[in-house]
Amino acid sequence: MSSRVSATVNLSAISHNLDVIQQAAPQSCVLAMVKADAYGHGAGEVARVIEPRVGGFGVATLDEADVLRSVGIVAPIVLLEGFNFSHELAIAKELKLDLVIHNLIQLTELVNDGAEGIPRIWLKLDTGMHRLGFSSKDWKKALSVLTDAHLPVESVVMTHMACADEIGHEQNQLQEQCFEEMSRGLPFPCSIANSAVILSRPDLHRDWVRPGIMLYGVSPFGAGQLVDSLKPVMTLRASVIALRDVEEGEWIGYGATYQCSTPKKIATVSLGYGDGYPRSAPSGTPCYLNGVYTELVGRVSMDMLTVDVSHIPDVALGDQVELWGEHVPVEQVAAHCGTIGYELLTGLTNRVAFHYVR
Image 1: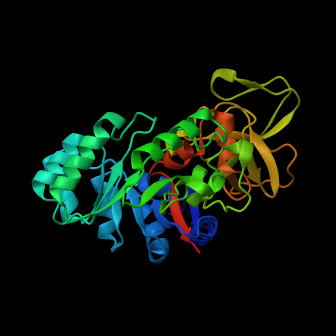
Image 2 (image 1 turned 90 degrees about the vertical axis):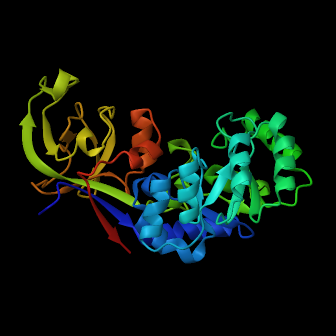
Image 3 (image 1 turned 30 degrees about the horizontal axis):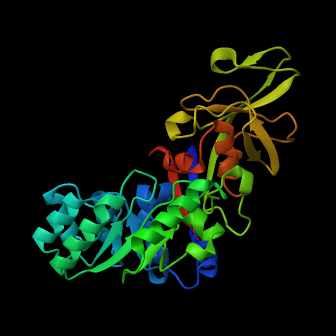
C-alpha cells in the first residue's frame, strides 16, 4: 500500500551530528536524548545506530526505557524525571536504569530501599529554572542523607539551563553561579550542557553533555541562528493529489483566508493536521517541490493543504512536496507557525509512514 505521507529518517545524518557533538565536546561523555520517541524520529532505530559511541541515553518515562531495552539496548539509560511511586522504583531496577533524583522524598525512599540494582543516580539541582531539582535550602540535607547512606551507586550532579538558547541572557550567568556554589568541592562528575550550551559555552561542557535537538540536525537557537554543520535527519513529504487553476479574486480553503491577487495554479497536497502538520501554518509557510521553493496558500485542513505552484513547470499528480527536511529547515516552518521545531517533530501522528535510510 502506498503512503500518502512519509517521513524519511537519515540515520547517517544522526551519525554525522554526533560527530559534530563529539568534536565540540571531546572531553565529555555524551548522554543522548531519545525521549519522546527520539524527538519523533524513532527511539529504537536512533539508539541502535549510536549506542557504541555514547555513554547512555536519556528518556522521560519508564515506557520509553522499556522500548529501548526491548530492542536490545544495553547502554545506560537515565530516567530524567526519576520515579514517583514505589512500583516505579521496582520497574526501574528491573530495567537497570539510572535515576534522576530531584527531591528529598525520592532520595529518602531510595535510601530506605538500598538502591541495589540502580547503576547511577543523577542529583538534580534547581539553579533557577524552578521545575525540578533540589533547592539551595534542601541541598545540604540531601548531601547529608546521601553521605550517611553509603549507597552502592555512582553519582552525578546536574542542572538544566532555562535560557541557554538565548545567548547572553542574564539568567544563564545566574544559574551558572548557583551551580558552582552548590556543587563546589563535591567529588562527583557534573552535567550542565544541553544542545545550546554545547554549541555556545565550551567552558560548561564538564563531564557529561546532554545533546537533544542538535542530534536530529535542528538548531537549538531556532530559525534565527541555523547551525550549518548539522544535517537534518527527518524529511517530511506528501503527494500532489490534485491540480487546478484558480482565477484572480477567488478564495482558497476553509474560512476563505486566502484570496488570489492574480490567477494561480494550485496543488492540493495529501497532508494535514491529522498527520501532525500544524494547522497554525499560515499562507506563506515554505515548502519545496520539483527543485523549486514555494509556499502554502489557504488554511491547513485535517487531511490536505494547498500550495501555490504557479511558477513551477510540469507539476504532475504524485509529485512529492517536501514540507520540512533537507531543503526546508524545520526551524523555518516552526517560525512561521509561532512554535519551535521540537513541537513539529514530535507531533507527527501514526498516519505518517516512516522510512529509515543510511
